[in-house]
Length: 282
Ligand code: SF4
Ligand code: SF4
Image (cartoon, protein in one colour):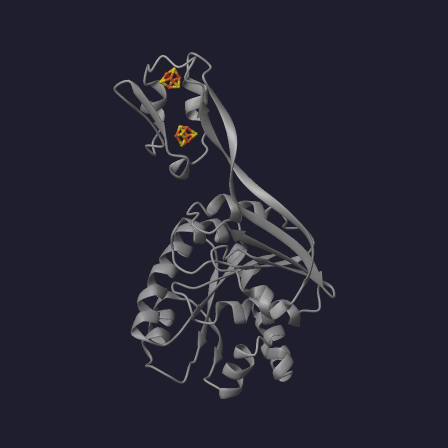
């Protein structure tokens, strides 16, 4: 079962939910931190990292001795990553989506592919919990290929919890696609509501069942609850503002370490998700 934890905006408590849910379950669990621009689940999980893999993506390299400047590569590239201007051919590797189209169409066989570094995938464990995260290279913008590589570590027969990046753009879709359930985390504020609407819209397009956690639930107003009820999105947990929660977070501690009674709440949350998935699929 794959559960993706997402939020329309950052700072809502998404990683708190993902990490605490992961360590609370009794079944075999893996946690994939796909928030590759700013992974921080490891700060709370404190895993033993066993392996690091550098991830590259193929980008074109042109042999100008063979190139006739015919412009066919320029025509097929949808991303302006290879451009012929007059007597010059330019490549912009950071814009390349590695589709391989230019290599295919080049009549002179002038284009080969070379690897451009995107970042690293690291994996390890904490007790029985498998841990994987991606770290995007500083200055790199192309995060979906790195997220997809992190997700390749998904193993059947385990509960896979994905900490998705915030927002609703391509990296988030790469982190939610194929999930059995999306758990959205929000706050009961106007900003929270605005971004929640975008997130619910994205999840509905993907056709994945979803539920909501309201963090700092005793602040703000009731509009998030009204919206969720109107959309048929079940509210599965509310986390009220508690100074001890904020303090444990600032110390890099898991909530369930500081307040063990939360473990049972996260287990109940998981059981509610288990109940919802087959009901929606039938
Ligand atoms: S398709 Fe090949 S030969 Fe034509 S401009 Fe591009 S690299 Fe040069
Ligand atoms: S691989 Fe695709 S995206 Fe990259 S330069 Fe070639 S055509 Fe453009």
